[in-house]
Image (tube, rainbow, N blue to C red; front, side, top):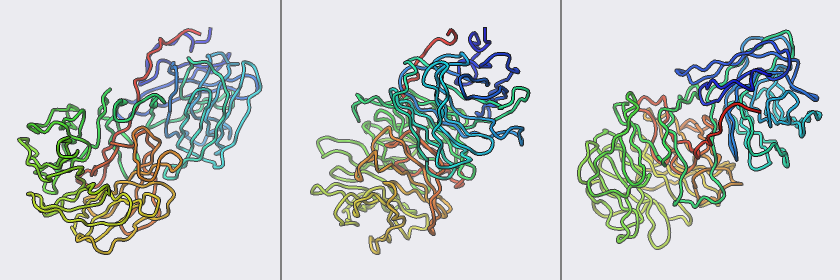
Length: 494
């Protein structure tokens, strides 16, 4: 019996691993909890024709899923067709029906599949080579491969009507394309997500959440907390020690070192949404909390240490997004006369001033660290794009107007050099919407302009980075990714 059939040793998020095929040189799999990386070694003649030989790190799953990793080979290698990637198999026999998203040693990137046991393998080649970002999604019997060179958008290929059964083996693989040679690969930022079902009722039903920290320079991601609840919009405290987020109407202070959340006292204001912002001096927290009798979301302020909040706006909907560097002014999105525009209001309360008047939705207003500009997003052109204006609302101009995506929530780094924002796919969302549970990019560009770079490929959306999420040293971003509960399927067995 193939050793993979009976292997039950869990490794990270996987159920087991082993060699697929007959008389294969023994491979291995190792998980490094500190780096959250997996290293695989494997041999085998190939993954092709009517049978396969390789090393497989797998998890048994049912239903739909999205799997993601950044993968790289170790060393120069022997055969140009050595392989790394994701695979979904009906079983662990060498002749099993399967589909895989694969990158070869020579850079060939493709979606390969065997429709039935012992059938010949077929291939759809991607329009790029040397991908190092690999995602594979199952939706019913449709499998979608999304691949990229890190920093660039996905390139997509798809196979429909591939029936591998509901319960499958999903995992990372490595094959050497040479039965006498062991090759090695490293897989980082490995994620398995269960997407929202079609039956999910938005804003009534929610998926689970992971708080992730993203190193902007390297793109390296680290999950620091996971919850079956909806966690949203982490703000980084000025001392760099905590994150402030909302969940089920409450505000939480998450201790990064201890990896523990604690409810932050917001007195009687307990219907908080994901539009909460810290003052530049780190002492005050601005809240947006629903009050039905006042028209919806109302803006409040409270000391970061906690207490009874002070009401700032007399009516709603009012959604807070920015605090001026001098602490004297708040900027928010307000719906007045059925039109959403950006307003300013004194931080201590007082008359609101309308800053935008273009037809359409203006949202996500945030001050630059020098206080001279307010950055925001607007769909006044028919596409959601990044804009900026002077602090008094004058000289409104686009910052990024390519119109490739619907771009939301520009966040300026504390050093004033960078803008990070979230991009929704135009084929998935409307220009005036930023829903939960979509394929989104976190993108980065210089404040001075230039071509944006993708720094994270995320299943998320609403609540991922609605409000400022930079670390105080401008080196990291805190954000939320989402997943339904992973199905529990007993490992082992054919």
